[in-house]
Amino acid sequence: MAVVAIAIGALVIVATKSLWVVGGAQLLIGVGDTSIAPILAAITLGIVGPTVFAERISRNEVFNHAGNAANALLAAVLGYAFGLGYVALAIVVMAAASCLVLARIDAGTIDHRQARGGDADDRSTIKALAQTPRLLLLAVAVFMFQTSNGALLPFLAQARTVAGDNPSIVTGVMTVVTQLTMVGAAVVAIPIARRIGFAGVMSTALILAAICSLLAAATHSWFLVIVVQVIGGTAMGMSGVAVPALVEDIMRGTGRAGSGLGAVLTAFGAGATVSPLVAGMDAQRIGFSGSFLVLSAIALIGWVIWVLGHWYFERRSAVLNQQKAEPG
Image 1: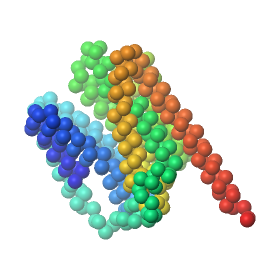
Image 2 (image 1 turned 90 degrees about the horizontal axis):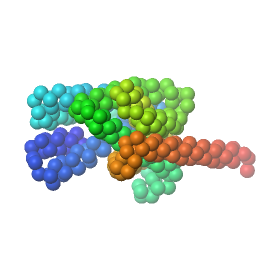
Image 3 (image 1 turned 90 degrees about the vertical axis):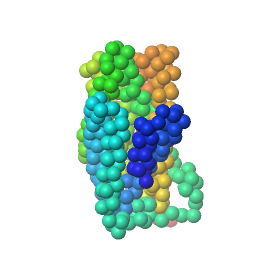
Image 4 (image 1 turned 30 degrees about the vertical axis):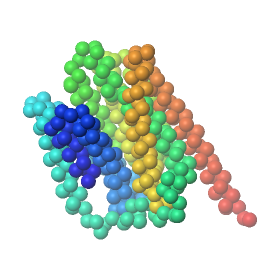
């Protein structure tokens, strides 16, 4: 249903000029788009189990970002050569192909209890999530990460456009470079996690986001734009693997793994919404460079919160385990 919603929304946007209808179609696309990640994560967990879940998520993310890069190239070519109508048609064709692939998954291979992360207790879902402080910490970190990162690409594209570059070319190049970098980052996230853990991977992503915005504030030259996109793509690719893996670990045994990931991705979406607002207001007052510095500071604050919070929970867990191990 989520894939079909995206296809319908794309067709409606091209077929109408009504502002309200277009807004409704964008809402439909947004709902469909944000539903895909938790659904795929639950299916993946139900099929492969928690032991190899992170490795499979990494592989999923590789195909996801490769598909995004191919989609950006295809949309640019079709839009330039034939018009936006053909871009919508291509989305419909890809949605149909996705449905055919999903239909080939044997429902019997999905362990639904495993997909939920175990059996749920009697608490309401909202109460259970609110009473899981490590999940709330991750949600805050993800919110800060995406608040810092969400507006970077479009505002950097605007800066290049103000400098006289073609906006379509700028956006296309940035999107493809970022997505291809995310493919590589998703591949290396697992080997890195074996050394420093997924919490360390998330810490690295936050630091890279801070560095990315800091470099963007320094200059808007084409070389540095590409460097920024590579660093930003690396941060996004690493976080895309780390976040589902961390949620699965935090929510294991609660029966609410999908709800936990949905809550964290809601924080991600909130950050993506707030980011352009923050960057836009700052750009008006202190310019593009100043707004990038603010975005860098937000990522750095998120990193501090994440590192200190993770240290606190690890220490508390160690103390509790030690107390349990001691004879009564």
